[in-house]
Length: 410
Image 1 (cartoon, helix red, strand yellow):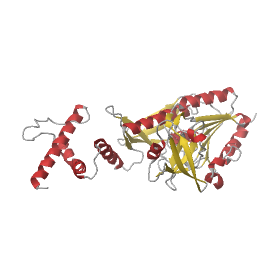
Image 2 (cartoon, rainbow, N blue to C red; image 1 turned 90 degrees about the horizontal axis):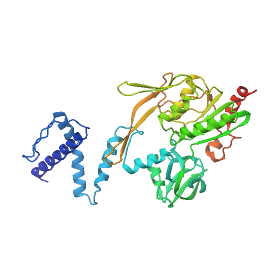
Image 3 (cartoon, rainbow, N blue to C red; image 1 turned 30 degrees about the horizontal axis):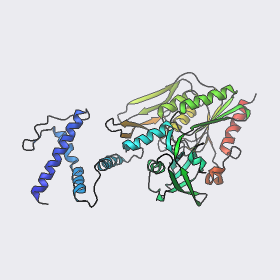
Image 4 (cartoon, rainbow, N blue to C red; image 1 turned 180 degrees about the vertical axis):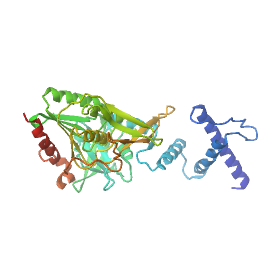
């Protein structure tokens, strides 16, 4: 390519960038100086800071031009844009921030609302082997019907290896049209097994509860999403009607969820005061507070290394106020808060970390986690085969009952 052609190409890219800035400016996202007659000798006027910004991103358009004109395969314009933005976000080195296309964001919203087409499992990426691992199989779902178990590691879906993927990418491989099938290769107890699951619409049951011995209520919360607040309140009310004298809240393997939801739920266990505070990069602080109404009964909260984010807000507040005991193992250590910014033009969204949160006593637990009051781990054989866990052999649950037993005795 000669110098003249290269100069013309670069000039055209600058003009395209200026037009983009002008459009963005009309939407109120940028402040740009006066744009002067683009047809007059290809000359424009912009503020210096905006021009420097345009030049900084010129390489993006150079690469796009090469791919669209010279690459062996035809480029998908929208895909190029989407992945350019994804790359921009990934440069923040923050695994909790992401750009989601309209379809990806729609799936996330369906997950959060609790009703979706899929197979019906809660997963996380196991830090020890980077494998997608089943944390929970929701009842009355395709996964339950196909015999999937807690602890199963997902190796492949329809022959496609599920490696070097984040949890959203793995989830996308499991979703599909209602009634369609997906064949999964699983690692279970060191053996590879296959399971074919028929995708269907289902509602995730994120709260399960029961009355245990000595009138001790038990509530398990798998995520702070969907209708979790309503379901939790209904569980509390039913247990109270049954004469509950003590309460166990099980947050083991709960990866988090809605900030407002967890604050509403833990508020019912706390005295008046701060529940959690957040602070952004500009040192601006926001505080969520509880009222003076509290349940006022003996309490134990179960936690483990997969209890993260909103679960740690709950556990940290309970521990700081001393209204209950934490039993289990150290929590995950995610003390960051994300926000979703949807783009009305096409339904895509940006999720990014905007603040760090602190417990009522001002503890920063990010990257550190919360140590339980009673540190007790499950036996190794149950950790390797979690499907074998029962109430009777669950030493963490039994320890919680031991703690509560003298407090609820008549």
